[in-house]
Image 1 (cartoon, one colour):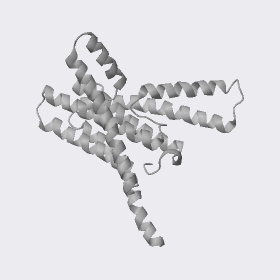
Image 2 (cartoon, one colour; image 1 turned 120 degrees about the horizontal axis):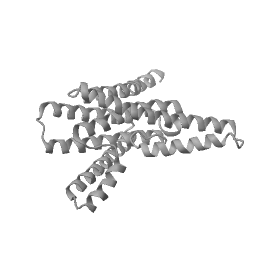
Image 3 (cartoon, helix red, strand yellow; image 1 turned 120 degrees about the vertical axis):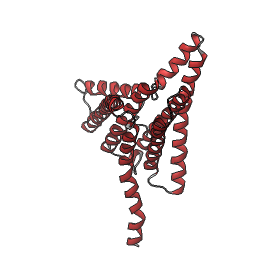
Image 4 (cartoon, one colour; image 1 turned 180 degrees about the vertical axis):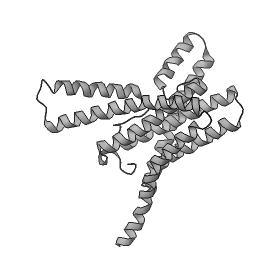
Length: 246
């Protein structure tokens, strides 16, 4: 699921990966709000917040929103640099490693939540880290799917869903090639499922925060590791198989 990219990927691969990571993104986004007071994956809202806070001369909060956006962009930059380096070095599991990096960061943040006393400065740093992680994850799934799937950008997913619904409705009144109609239906299902999974992830993240506050980030990290492990194992077997066939 994490070894093939772009045109080599099937709708099923994109749906499975996108849905799984959408659950993670929804959970992290809600967790960030409940723990820190900010949606760490909602860059549209943060951009609007900058404008509103500048209008009200609240430059401190405006700067915080800007910092969240910068952190998200830095996450996307790190993901892209990691993927590009992995390609040059022939790392087939580079996308799996990206998820492992995300899991490691969340584990470190979870340890910090447990070991360090609550204070505003720590919360700000944690907010930036979560935004960074969301940028990293969104870039990972965007790159591997060829921009077909995004897991934190619900606005874009809903736009894609609306487009596919419109194309599907038109198929009842205008003749559409059967193969193209099948693609429309698959894309409709793909975007609808990812949006649904993001919401489910938010529900689970909120419940996890209430009942497992100290350990929720470890649970999310375990999910990421579980997603990454099959790709890493499969990639590790390739050189062995090649040696055996020579």
